Length: 385
Ligand SMILES: Cc1cc2nc3c(=O)[nH]c(=O)nc-3n(C[C@H](O)[C@H](O)[C@H](O)COP(=O)(O)OP(=O)(O)OC[C@H]3O[C@@H](n4cnc5c(N)ncnc54)[C@H](O)[C@@H]3O)c2cc1C
Picture 1: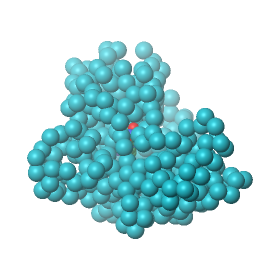
Picture 2: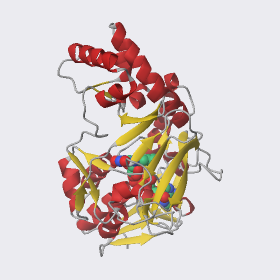
Picture 3: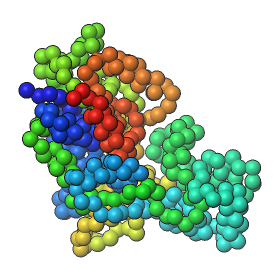
Picture 4: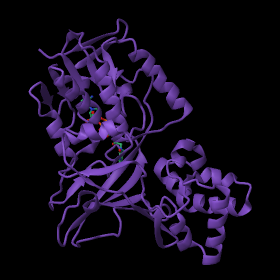
């Protein structure tokens, strides 16, 4: 009766399902959680404040097609994300910019560093802290070391559980030093948040006569992968139509080659009887505290509520599927060994002609939501008409 099965209802699964449904395909979505939306899930907590249960999510993209696609399912308000970091007891803009520099250095020194930076990197808007540290100019390299030690070293060690030199350089380069006063966290062309929250987008996307959603249903219990013959059985019957899988690739293959490593997070929500808790949507705590950042959701949602607010503290923890805390795989740990292990799984799954992998878990990749939506749009186009 169904033309395709989609495992997972995050953006990867929901966008693919909707695209196929719009082409007349009858799609079954299987979701192991009790809600749709994957890690984008948002709803009110017990005090009536809307929160992102899997960490703060901000939409930003340079992909016009992705934003246009999403506009079908929600109205959006313009939102530019700003982050502060607590450094030496002061709150300064992150990414580190000229305002941060002026706040943390004596004026004369700050002026000298700014002039040097502008002379050394003319017309450049940002530069990696790793490049600054390698600069031949002594003043610039010392400045780079300062930023690295105050903003990156402890934060990275907390976030990843290893010293920064063991972390892939792309992770450090994700937050460059800004050579100016632009204090926005993202510079993308389209920056916005959904007027009625992220979950409403998924409700609208999946509200289609060709889509059936089954919640609280683990695909692992209904799928059998016959690796030898590259065949998939669903509910014990051979399934030869497309199956789009957005869960973890190692789980799908029964952990045949071992588990792919991830970093996880322990989320601690706090309700406070104040209208506003902090002066920015997110405040980073790179150094003294055990948590990495505090998010105050009202900034992200524009919700107005007098005398109450909800904040989220994020404590990075090792991923352990059986543990009480840290049992959700959030960030793939990208290094040569882990990518080689992923490739082993991928070589295996590639043999199944009707299996399509999409999303952060299936592709073992850090995807922002815009990139995963773009990928799902392209994938759906490529699945036989
Ligand atoms: C803390 C954090 C903050 C982030 N912030 C941002 C941000 O600000 N902006 C941004 O653009 N991106 C952000 N991201 C990235 C964003 O979360 C992802 O791009 C997006 O959620 C990926 O969607 P997905 O569908 O691939 O995965 P998911 O949303 O994880 O969806 C996968 C779904 O599959 C289900 N599933 C898995 N296995 C099975 C199974 N066996 N049976 C049935 N169902 C199954 C899961 O329950 C889940 O619902 C952030 C990520 C993290 C971790």
